[in-house]
Image 1 (cartoon, rainbow, N blue to C red):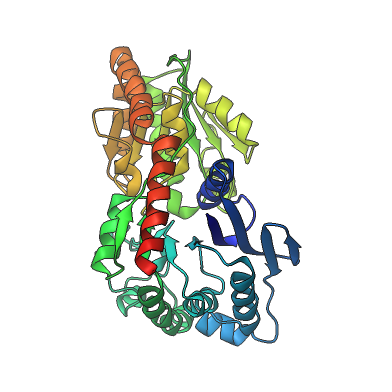
Image 2 (image 1 turned 45 degrees about the horizontal axis):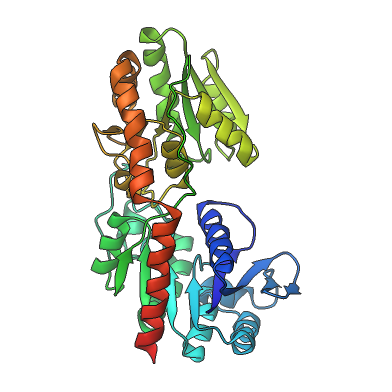
Length: 395
């Protein structure tokens, strides 16, 4: 099978790219020809990829207001013609969204859109009101309440409104199947008339190793240090945790725009920031941690950190936001708490660290859930069948 993958980034910068490069490797190992179309600071063409320069100067107005570049449209249209894929697997598509969709429409090829975040139906990708942190129930895309609720400044709202109106219409017209890594986003996409849509969770290459409870009481956060991740609520919970668990430590792995403010907030606490580290070091952090905390305030989709942490046998304290609840089962392999609730984070963390039997039970359950539900083999088999189905239906 010849598969063309399209994504905004050709670098491993986030969970979407971790998934993309992982699935490309698996597809090639089973004998498929996999091609990549993406963007970078300089153009380069290789045997199985076309990376084009994404910096626009002359046509910036068209790109910003309409998500359109004639250059990108022509490059992609010609590349599709040269590659002649059996199926096109679209991933993140924000930079030149409408150029890409128009080129796909022109090709008449089967198209699957893998929706990795909430940006298709929410202009901020949060799907949460930024001031109140309440979940946005709207499935109408960009509306006046995006302004009223303080989610978007006026100039951003104006520039985004028309672009997204065009995009949504094209998505419904061009895409043959939408894939969501979370059940919650799948349901939102259905309500938004993005059909057909199915839930296909992420996968992880699982190693069946014995779960061992490490010494010490290290709490671990892994991820970006940005407002949407809610790390401040974890740090604010830590003094109360420390009162009950004297040897508790909080390790924060990751970097981002909020790091300086978070370091200031945690001054005098037993909190250590490690910054962005190589993946093998992240895995070492999982080994030494007692539990993993995910205090997100935005709607997560299929956070890869959870897959990794749970496969390492880590219980999880996490918020009830988006796809988190697809993996973390309250009272089974961790606890689900309200978003932006430091008291609840502290209470559940203390409860778990004080109960060794419960901690061990949750640890085993985390690993069991990954082993039984989110394996590489199961995911690849399902994806292969999806490819075959959309190809057959397009004939």
